[in-house]
Length: 146
Image (tube, rainbow, N blue to C red):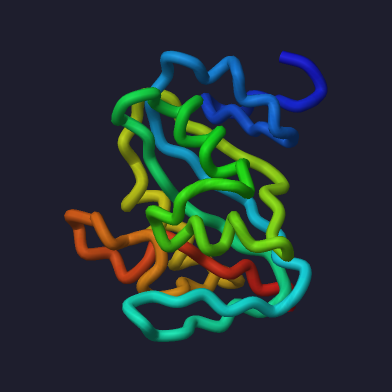
């Protein structure tokens, strides 16, 4: 596994961009994102202000290419904007500082709901949930540093 990965209770935590070993795998993932300055993204022509700090995005990859394809896409700065999270990950002030994956489990909504109930995590409504069948208010959360 090397220095960039650790395994805890079936979740692989990637602390670097080395995600090659996810080739051929599918599952749910968390992106740990640091934003170094306040930024604005736009959802349905409405600006959403994101303040400097740390965030978590909850996603899943069960389509073509699986986790490797999806995670490589997220870590690239140059890409066509497809999802709201792309506006965050493409911004020069954002950096993916870690990735956690759960293999072969579609737990996107369950993880979001669990995190949203924990003190210190604040959902950012309308980001990451546009295709959510469970009608979650978001799949993107701020980590409050109080």
